[in-house]
Length: 211
Image 1 (cartoon, rainbow, N blue to C red):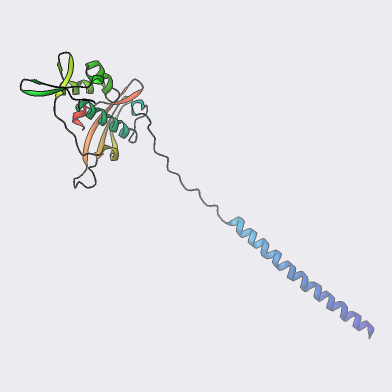
Image 2 (image 1 turned 90 degrees about the vertical axis):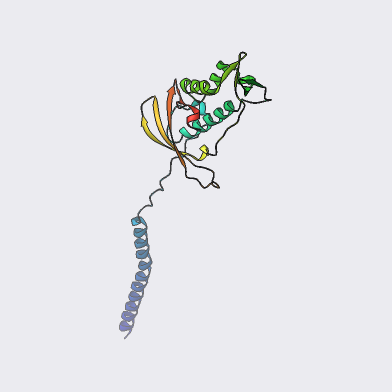
């Protein structure tokens, strides 16, 4: 009788240990499956980053011309054109010649050498001289122009450029220039030539043909 009780006790203990082992093995197996799933998960692809726009700190020193750097060069060329076309700065000194009223250019640009030096920071010499020949006269040794102001509404700061042709030293871009948003006009398309002078790019189209 005692032998049967001992045998039954041993059997009960063995069953208990087996159940406990199975219970402990189950979480371990789940952990292995979870780890396998984690390892099998595909890695996320890194988002493609867009190259930042090229920043131009000095439009007179552009060595690489493209659809981005052409715009600040044009914006600066526009400023120089209207500065010269407006006579420069300071008080206006006028005179009359052949029934027309003229004004002298301001002292910083009232000689051909000074005006050329100023314009050629944005334009080629050929484009600069074309402007001078069309708008400027010499009176008593000083440069002068008709006493009249002009301007346009086009916003070159918001324009875009598309290259039409290129060589190592010459480029032609088609410029899409919008009007102010409140003006119900379609954008204007202008072809502009550029030329590399030394190390830097310049506008090679006469300013009055652009602006």
